[in-house]
Image 1 (cartoon, rainbow, N blue to C red):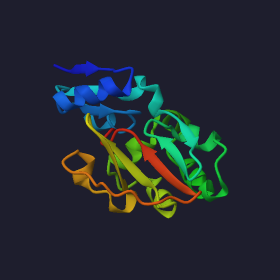
Image 2: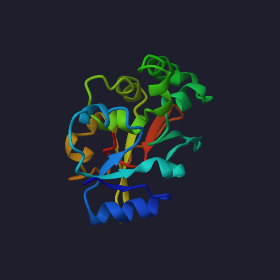
Image 3: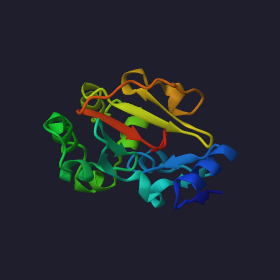
Image 4: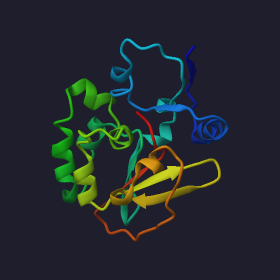
Length: 175
């Protein structure tokens, strides 16, 4: 039987994650197709209720792209010219429906060979945030590993940013 949970704030989601290994659902564009014809018997945490994870904001030295930021959000955002390559790449991701639902976190964390955003994010020296109940850490996207995707390790590196860096913040390992 499928267990489903949709927290409405980051803290509740992190607490639930500390208690049980949920399958995290962001936009669902890879989650559902991967399960066609299969019985769903996993615990699924739907992250779409956590509004703070869907944002694009500038902090002076970095542009933060929240984990639930969609491709449509990226295309419509007023970003520095250094992000033009990313904007062009995300326009090629699926159709409009996929661009409206697909998230930056899902694109990175699904580890798909078609992770369209990754080369452009690497060119921007993007960092990826990993949050757990007790702390959050960040690592360079270049050094991001499958181990970190499933939360079995984390990097504590804190590289200094320039005005054109991207930081993908929030949950790690969502579809």
